[in-house]
Amino acid sequence: MNSLEYSFNPDLNKIIQVLTLFCQKNDNDLNKVKAVKLMFLADRYHLRKYGRLLSSDIYYAMKMGPVCSNTKDMTKMFGKSISNNSYNYSTSGVYNSKVFSNSDKEALNFSLENFNKFKYSELVDITHDYPEWKQYEDFFMKSENKKKRIGINIFNFFKDPIIRNSKHIINYLDGKDIFAMDKDLLNCSKTIFLKSLKANELWNQ
Image (cartoon, rainbow, N blue to C red):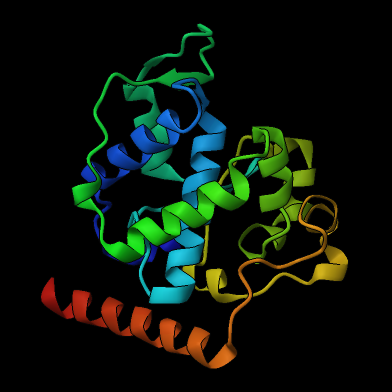
């Protein structure tokens, strides 16, 4: 099952608040690619631990890594940053934390605490090592595919990277898989997610 096949609707209000938070944590001058990577990393954490994507966004693999489609599009709604760089954005919005559950906040804090220190280009490298994208590495190495995208199998979020083959995790994260968790708990989250997909499918019949 790829991300295009599940029928949850992206929570656009929540995505706006995430983008507002991320921007404020970066002096109101945030690279759009970095924002998308931080969202992916928060979603990855939340799905693996709680069996639900924080954003309910649709994911694609692209040359620069996993991309949450609606989040990427919504960065265009914000103004240009104070650096007047079309690749950065700023916001005059007020962050509203009330749209988030406690587990949402936990995932956002995880993403910011562990990854906000990196440049966008470094986050591109790091996210290339996770299974969601790694399987497409050879595809995107071909010049004719650099502008293409592939729907990500959302269940690959539950897979662990092979550290010995993950040069960027070794380089930037000291070879530590910071998403690692107990296998039984991970399988429980996977079961919860699968059941939620089936329930949603029945609800929408």
